[in-house]
Image (cartoon, rainbow, N blue to C red; front, side, top):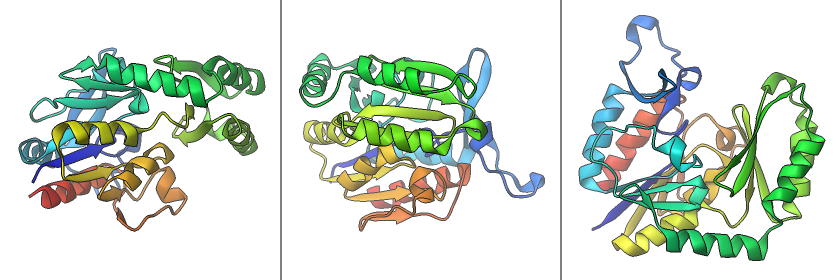
Length: 267
């Protein structure tokens, strides 16, 4: 049986130093493997055990990294195991086939966004006009598809995120707060749509998924079985669904547990 494993990366399979949640005594901390370097600095990690599990998973299933990262940000990651044939970037805006974007898929996505959502420029202008430089560090646009802010969390007014979410909802966009980033993403721009397309192409009969943020909810709902870690937006909201297992593990230990579950189901 062909199995497709679609997994979010950041805070699901790979972790920044700040997100590792190494709560055990130092002497019992797991050995870590650096899987991303940015500007000559180590940025993301997984446990060495998780790296071994991911290598095994690459042989047992069609593993598809499924991320909100841009293509450029994704290509900095050096995952262990066989190079994935397929990857999903920009929250479903790009399907990469052997590292190269599929132009037909991207064109379909753009046509749908033009039909169903307010334009990116309008959303970006609203975010810039209503946010405050005292707590915004960066304004960013990703792949000309969606916008995000990098903020100081402790200074961020909670009401601002709620008001932005209501404003965006009426224009066909969704808002997600992840760590220090606030994303505004068009509703039809989903990981699940891209995963369904890859499942169709590969003839997968079983789809497994994992993710930690609100932008992963549609991915988890579209899968036959899903897992979410004990941290992140979905855990904070107490979000669950019939085919989704809420794991107790937090931080890099959750990444390891998710890979064990993927491997068990794939075999």
